[in-house]
Image 1 (cartoon, rainbow, N blue to C red):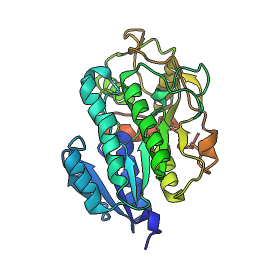
Image 2: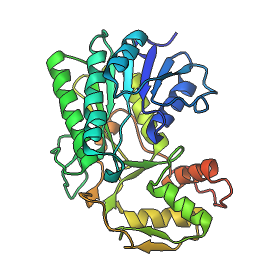
Image 3: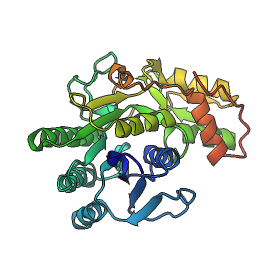
Image 4: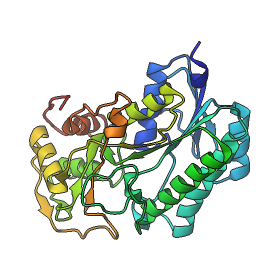
Length: 321
């Protein structure tokens, strides 16, 4: 039998990059834990090999059905990963608020009906005001980035609610990441797609300073917080590589290590609106848990290439940095 706080774990956002890797890690590392995944559209192929993972079709924007799904399962922990709108054009403003703020609050409200349910909220490094240095957990939350602002609103509301209601809440703020199950028009899937087609890769000037982490390391940090259980006095953690590198440097390094022959068209695309020019995590708090980012970013991109672009010839880089 698992420890009491690991008996039943409910996860949202499992079709996304981070949620997918969290569920796979839970399924493999904690086979005695019952993991329930809430999905708007069921995909039975994602976790078919994991006997302790079951799927339930629920649109988390449907508050009534969401509350019922949570209370029926009686989770000992909830990992809330579901979110949308990193690219502002992908979703309308009010839909962004309904999903990233209202649904998060409704899920937290449902958790408050369950004794000693640990609520783990996945926020983002985009909540911070630009500090021109690595962001610390106590730095101001202030951004006009639509996604970052919506996540900041949920972040603040949940922490205020947990304080008022004396609930067990942990907020994790991952910075940029990639790896298995990354997709769509995100940076590294787009780069690999261009390499496969033999086309130039258009990107911004790449002068913005970024912190990119392998998604498996981020998933490990989330699961470590879950395994730790009660964390008195420590409720917010930045999760990232802790490295300050220009985006053009990050992309160039990955291309060299994978042997990708891609014409990088730097400056072809504008910066995204309200994009911070320096977004790096200070990770000393996460390190205090015994967590350390270990995976070479290029290795995470190599795993993505092997999984999603198997016909693309890439060199295998070192696994650990």
